[in-house]
Amino acid sequence: MAYHMLIAEDEVIERMALAKMLKSYMGESAIIHEAENGRQAVDIFKEYPIQIAVLDIEMPVMSGIQAAESIYAANKECCIIFLTAFDRFDYAKKAISVQAMEYLLKPYDAKDLLSVIEAAIYRVDTHKRWRTAEPPVESAEKRGNITSAIAKLMEEYVCAHYREQISMQDAAAALNYSEAYFCKVFKQQFGQSFTSYLTEFRIEDAKKLLRCPTVNIKNVGEQVGYIDSNYFAKVFRRITGLSPSEYRLENC
Image (tube, rainbow, N blue to C red; front, top):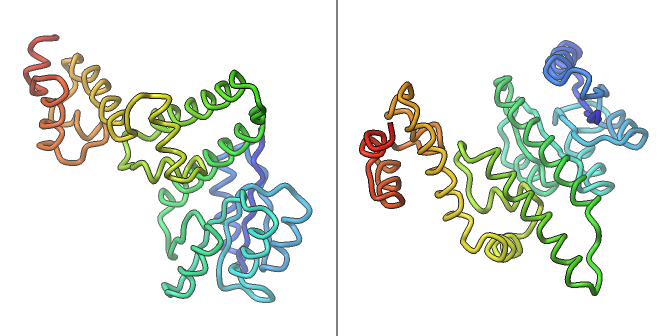
C-alpha cells in the first residue's frame, strides 16, 4: 500500500529538502504531492486521497491553518502535521482545533519529524483496519468478533510502543477511541487495566533480556520503557518477588 502524503511549503528549497527526506525514508511506499501555498494544497487534497498532510503555517494565498481547516472539514481522518518558524499561542490553539498530530517549530529535528510521520502512518493503518472490520449487527457472536479485532489493535499498539512513555490516554487517542470506551473494551478483553497490562508486558520483556547474560542489567529498565532504573527495580520486584540481579542469578 502506498501512502499519499502532501507537503505544503512556499520556500522551494525547504520543500525540496523535505520531499527528498520523505522519499528517501519511505521509498516506494509513499506518493509525495507538493504544494507551494495553502490553496494549492487544498486543490491537491481534493484531487488525491491524501492521508498525511505536512503544512507550513505561513504561506501566501492561503495559510496552512486555513488549508488544514478545509482538509479537516472534508476528512477528519487525514493526519495533519504543522511546521512553523513562529511559536505563537494562536497557532497552537488552531492546531488543536483541527486535531493536528504535531506542531513542530523550525528548524525541526529530522528524527522528530520522522517519528511523527511513523505515528501518522500507524494511525492511517488503524483507521483502515477499523473501516474494513465488519460493522456491528444484532448478532452477539459478530459483535464479539469485532470487539476482539479492536482488542488486537490495542495489543499491537502496546507491542509497538511499550518502550516509549505511553499512557492509556495516548493509546486511546492513537486508536481514535474515547478514553471511556477504550478502558471498557480493554478491561473486558484483557481482564485488567491498560496500566497493569503494560506493566506486565514490560516486565515479561525485561525477563527475556535478563536471561541474556550479555545484556547490561543497568540498561534493561530503559529498554522496556522505564527511564528511572530504581523505579524499574521496584516494579520488577513487586511483579516477580526478585530484584533484576536476583532474577538473573536464578535464570542464567
